[in-house]
Amino acid sequence: MKQAGPRALAFCEKPQGKTRIALIFGADPGLVSTSADTLAYNWLPSPDPFNIIKMSDDDLKRDPQLLADELVARSLMGGERLVRVRVDKDASSKYLIEVLADVEKGILTPEAFWIIEAGELNKTNKLRTAFEASEAAVALQLYADDESTVAELVTKRLAAAGVAIDPPALSAFVA
Image (cartoon, rainbow, N blue to C red; front, side, top):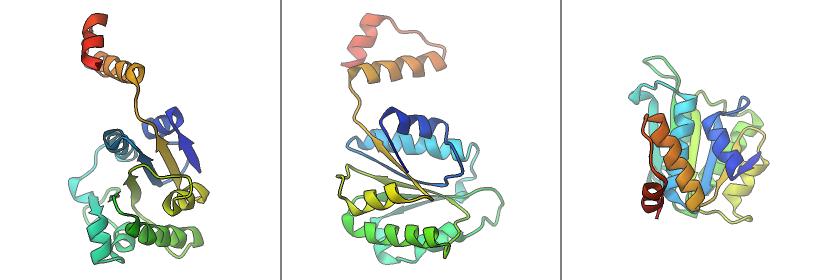
């Protein structure tokens, strides 16, 4: 399943359905990371730091089986687990697609939530097409923010903190 733009951000804010696997990608790495943080928080509101596993391309290259092992492992301390993978190289996509295929076939039943963060992926990218076609995962495409989106975000965050901002100050800040 695929969600894009505001719908993708809305999914991160309030995840729908039973989906426990998400690919978050876009040209703005800060937005991708922030959205992954938001989704992680909404899946696991008060996580134990020992239940969050962070992986990179190097981890996948060093031990391709590690991802599958982490996804099916149960927490010794109790509680839900989260596996976050940051992908910067196309070579890592092969391992992620293989694990997703095993989940789709029922060979692998993840115990942990799984978030993959990636940069801009074109429409024919194998990782993107695999996640978009998956019934077990969601592909969340994010677009870079424009000034009005940034202004709205700043206003929203400041309001949540109980702080107001004057329009001229907001304009200067957003610029």
